[in-house]
Image 1: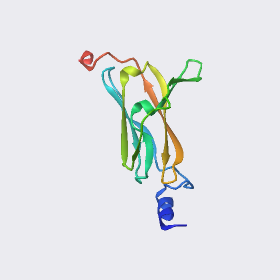
Image 2: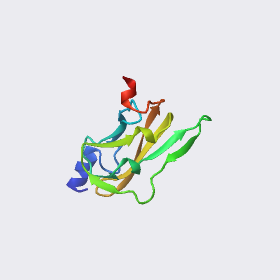
Image 3: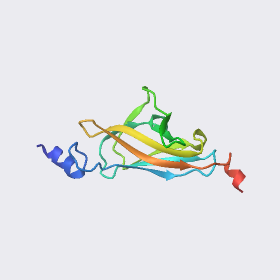
Image 4: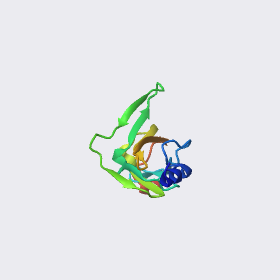
Length: 137
């Protein structure tokens, strides 16, 4: 095993790592339809990642009243991707793109020099939002 492989394994970036060193979570919830919902991808070990360049590259599933899930927004095959080793990657979604309900946001990408595939998901619950932040005043 090379020194680089050992370093990646210790940092949690190697394919055989027990726990993925990445976390996806909702960072900011919009209070109005003209605001943004921000999700964050934490990469504390600064692994080399190949991830969607914009929010449109993230799959969105909506929970139906029956408890089943449906594709709400799914990236097409031509979504731009980018390489990054940033400690945190932010994605901003327009709140107006969502109806009230419960969602799962799924980010798919590749990690490390071997390009090991990974996916992460986070939950998002959205209530009825006013059209603009000015309406809250």
